[in-house]
Image (cartoon, rainbow, N blue to C red; front, side):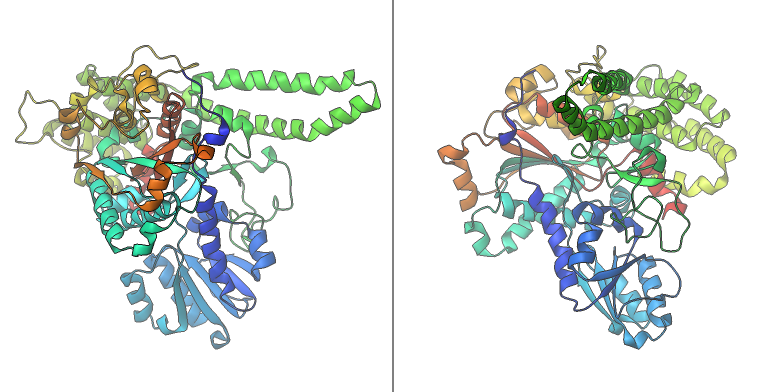
Length: 640
């Protein structure tokens, strides 16, 4: 594997995009003169916490009080009341109720910041409830939010479900607007290839927005350092197999077992250093992650999981879980040796040196304690028979091995009342991989699920059918015709038998033998085919992408449209194409955009792929981060 270039030449300056989101909020608040009470929804707390800090809003922008938006009469509010929420009817109803019932309502000025924009439906609801004229409504464009230096997300909830089931394509429009901002900052992207109907829709929106933008933008110089020379767009619908597979990287399993939301994880407060925010629970803390004002203290505390704040997490996150224990043991031994050095300190200078290192050692010790606890929670699941049986069935399904036997194994899991999500993920995998389940068998599975887990899950099964995730084989399909996934299995080398989990050389390590199809498509588009070794040498031909040459029939068989578009370079991009000597070491960046969400395992696979390509950087863009469990949650009636 070739070494990566020096850090000075790696990646775009994504801090600019974070500042754009932070400035958008702060400028809206500054336009409101006087002290302000900020009332926000829990599903926006995480995204806002990633772009700004509560202390900054309180100290510099006259925010004196903060509350969650929840039903009830609003009291103890400043004259200026500022609501911040997504454009959802449920929030509009609560806001309208508070405007009507707040004591001395005529003495308050009501402001509504809607992220990213107001909808006609929400406007109609406020109007019908008689409060539209009492509220000043403005848009709040947060745009792409950096989760890591190489991962940017819109942080939309349930984007896949809203797009594919509800027919709401607003997140695609917002991604197009965000990409226009990226092109304004770094120059027009010369070449864009993509797969999937949502990807095609995104491309059409980009072309329309390019035509409609002011002519002055084309001649303006890029605003930040970095050079984007290509983009690959993958629709989640193209690869639902990877979404429903159990992630086997450390970060992926933390998400599966504990849950990662907006780069935060809920942990026992005792695992973290006690601070002023440890025993209180209102949004007026140093983060946006507490419970509502007046609520009892939470049993869990939100903790930010990033490589910047936690070097041990940076080392663990992309590793297969099989080797995480060794890393933790090695770290524990090293820390113990470092602490023992205090006995070797004899002189005052040596004591001062140890005391100077003590803060760092304590931080590392806290991180070790945190990740040891998370690992123990994961192991409590991974040692169970249900987990291992499900994993074995999953591996056999994606490999196409003895499907009849896998049917019996799934039936056994249902009879054992294994978690419903485990059963449904396996059934969806079986349906996708085999191109559908025979009608009689499918009806038997549906009956068994409803009788075992309850008939209230019927809407969930119907939604899975509407999404073609639980389906019968197409009537017109030839018996000899292979399903799309089976057709792609060998040409894309999706199954790899010899996987080195401790020193991986192929992206299949993230699922212990299965290479995620979407990431394999990215690898092929970069010029490496399905062979990681050739990817390291061929993928970075300096100009751009290889596309899917030689795999046209395989890619065509996968769900959705396929496109390859070239955009005319603007003046800024031309200047980047012929950079001065001072910027010759600047590597081009290829954006990898996943619409409908991306799993943490796929992000880890893309990071491995990036390490194997010495001539370019990869930057991940997504609507949100997902897992098979979260996708099923979004389809459940109680989650909406």
